[in-house]
Structure formats: C-alpha cells, structure tokens
Length: 157
Ligand SMILES: [Zn+2]
Ligand SMILES: [Zn+2]
Image (cartoon, rainbow, N blue to C red; front, side, top):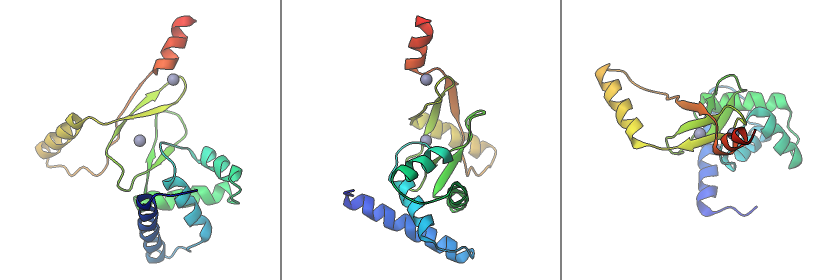
C-alpha cells in the first residue's frame, strides 16, 4: 500500500504515543499490537471487533480475537481509539487521534453509522459546561432512526 506523507507521519505519531503508554504501564510492546493500531488508523469510519478481526484475517495477519480485544482496550485507555455504544448493538470503535469532533446518526434498521459536524453543538456544549462549571471530557450524542435507503425500502413494503 502506498501511504501519503501525512499518513506516514500520523502512523508514526500514534505509534510513539502507544509505545510510550505500553512502556509506562508495564505492557509488552508486541508487533501484533502495532499491526492492529496501524490497521485501525488506515481505516475510516467505525468498526466492531469482529469486522476488524475478519479484515485482518483476510489480509493474512495472524492475530486472535482475544489480542484484538485486549489491544483495543489499551488503545481506548490511551485515547487513541474511541468506544461507542450505539443502542443495544455491539460496541463500535473509531480512531480518535486528531480526528475531527463529530456526532453520529445511527440507522436502527441496517445499523449504519453516519457522521456529521455541526458547530452549534459545540456552542451548546460550551455554554452548558460553563453554566455548570463542568469540565467535559467526553461527548456521546447519537440520533437514531432510518437512513435514506432503509426509509425507501420501508415505503416500498
Ligand atoms: Zn439503514
Ligand atoms: Zn464517528
């Protein structure tokens, strides 16, 4: 795969952050863990553990589900990956380093997750946190419903 200069720099930066985290917390720095990090950072959008496992298997990487679970947990702890729980679906994840602040639309029928950015939400966040003197560290907002494709199908039926 040909990577752009900025992709390479990003991979290098997140690898260094992860490396420092593993070392400072007494975790082993194994090649599998770096491979998983790389795979996550070369992917756009959201994924669950199973789909990441299958993709890596198809790409001929030998990593177990257990290693993926365990590595993602570490990546969440060092803020390189964000975990989302959309309704009762399995947990989904996405890379978070230098990734734009955004919120989600989740289709309750097909499960697809769409991202959107609206600066007005940041304005609300800032005014509410100021009002309560509350330091916001995480934001979890999702709208649920039917995506365009699913609404069209529902109308046909
Ligand atoms: Zn849908
Ligand atoms: Zn997202």
